[in-house]
Length: 493
Image (tube, rainbow, N blue to C red; front, top):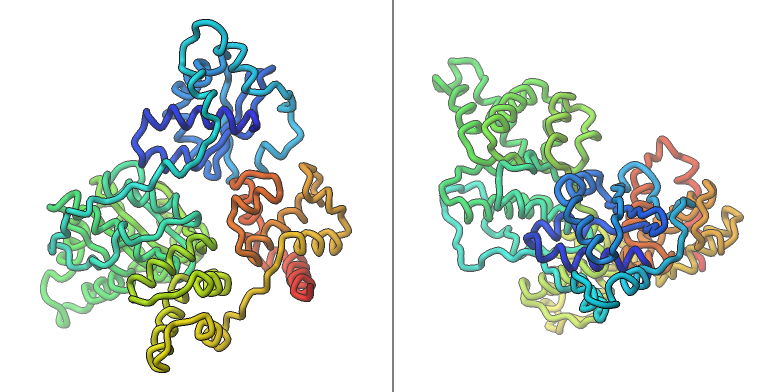
């Protein structure tokens, strides 16, 4: 076990008793110790998002130093870093090269004589898993009220399947529902089509309604907001007197405003102006705002800068396509919902061939059930294969990471050993990022599984994938051409 893992396990075991499960999942499960230098007495804690690092530093720095002091006997300085804007520290050739095992430090300081802290007890239990730290489960006994008709009661936290691509956003959403108008205001959630953004939006509203029965909640689409605004500004002869005031009061006298597809306000200048003033009024009165979009605020090009700035004032969280494990969990949940029985082999086949959209998973299950019923046959792998053959999604070959590494190394004429090493040479890092990106896109491996193959933690793998995924084809046309050629070569293996 590395020094970093060893010390981080100690911190997690002790911090778990100091914070709520929601705080633990939201902040500490998103971070890790990257480097330890017992000679220079330095530790680096890195997270994927800058916000996470800033929050841990601002709120728990003293507590973390205390835990490290108790368990190592050393006054360790903690540096905080994030993967938002640069290469993770653990991959650099820094001064963090000393090999003094953390176990030895603890043994020397606390496993001899009478020492505080209980490190002896921890040292007997070096195994560690996140399985003990479950997602918060809403109260099943609370019934929803009927006060807020804009909420879809079918969308709740209970039936939202949590996976690697949505766990962070799910926990932020949960915190908003139990503590609206707090530090996560506004909450801006973005991601592709069919990933559960609308489900999460209504889940926030429903849970908020459970926790605060007197709350007035508006959960609408931006299209509805636009249409109602336009109706309010029609010539006086075509509208009721006071319609403009009614519109303002409707959306400003709420405790929470939840808006779906906010990107559709792009280019609507007058509507944006109306929403700007509504937004300001609600935020000034500490009313919760939740916005859903298919793009991040910075990518909403036809939205006024003043709105983009305000959207980014709270917290921005994305939902990415579900990994293999999450797709399997969704399929099993939907099978219960649709009353359809499929073998593990059939579920695996579907999960391997549909990777980007939850709605497509649902659609395939419905088609399987319909086909089986119409043919008076039990649902089967053969029916699944027949249905997927007719869709735009072609069955994925059994591509191995070794195939991807070999093709990438050969294409760019780089040694395979260099790609699997910790080399930080620019040309090696570029190809390694491409290989990791392709492993994620072309295989069913999860982030941790890919990390095991490349000898990196899952946050580094996420960084590499995002590094390529966020590039624009217009900005890097040659890179995307290279990737397409590499994909073609891999497909021929």
